[in-house]
Length: 139
Image (tube, rainbow, N blue to C red):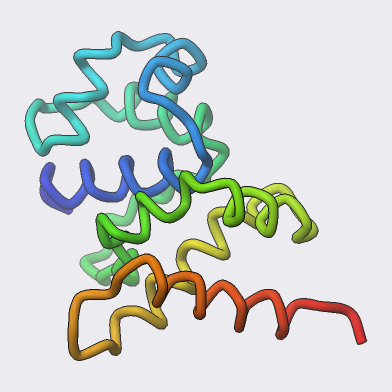
């Protein structure tokens, strides 16, 4: 994995968790500028630093040396990141079971948005959230 891709994955997990760089830095024992640089595709992190970041973000770290490619992570469109900061998204995500519900919801919405033939706007994300609410409701 290249540093630019690693940075995008770190940012995606941090945003999906609703965390700031400062809160992740405190939990990981790293500096804010260090994490900001990593998220922007700069730096040469150690495995220990990446392990600390993974733990702080509540995700697992998998190191592969066999040459098999790991599945690509869905990156979050900026419009979805903005939408995820809204009260409605936060309220609906809080209603879902499990610790990683917010992350799973964002990844599912990003995957649905990936098939769009145009950039999605806030109203589109509201519609997708409506769908997710309907399909996750108990009967």
